[in-house]
Image (cartoon, rainbow, N blue to C red; front, side):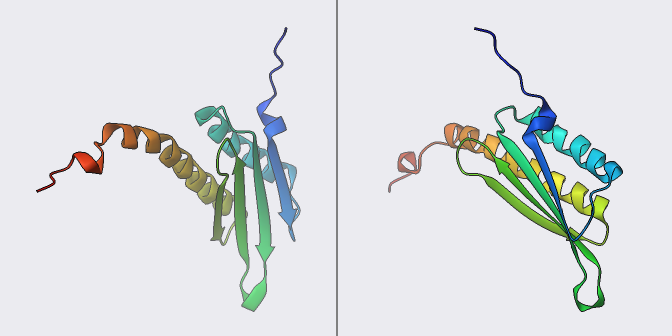
Length: 120
């Protein structure tokens, strides 16, 4: 039976809240988010919401990321004064969460159990 490969772009969902996602911004988000898919092929879906908040006289961009993967989903949120900067910070944070999650089983496997510690 032939296997069908899904393109990385089909796993990426982007949404702009109070901001229009221009083609340039959407392309930048896709390029950055594909890095996460290269690191972890078991990702089901990545959703990135970019919100433009204009409260209290300040303009802030809030980027929220949601990675659907086997096990608990990964969630992250960052804010910055620029949309591209918020996207960069979010992808970096999601990348750290993915690597932390990948290293957790190895850390448990390589550390002896507490019951083997000195019981004096």
